[in-house]
Picture 1 (cartoon, rainbow, N blue to C red):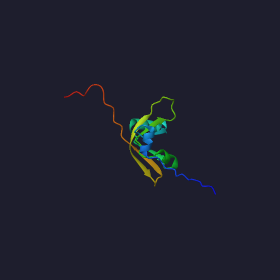
Picture 2: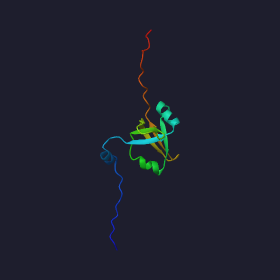
Picture 3: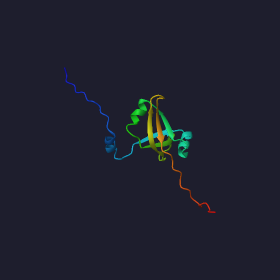
Length: 117
């Protein structure tokens, strides 16, 4: 009888992943349709849903700092819409992963200031 060694597969920790990647942010890349991309860009959509499946659970290891949204599959060189993640909820009842996004800060207004009475 042969002596066979069995190795236990161990998932790397977030710190080990960061050390290998060399940066401090965990980024998830999502592709959405134009309708939802426009809502995300305006700031009217602050929640993104994904199905609670093995596919998505493998991609979400540890806390996610940012989500980079793309409108479909754009040409190379297109910059993503970057939104910071405030919270992630794993909802077992509805079988969904819910990403709560931080609200967008409105850009500073340029031009004349309102006249004082």
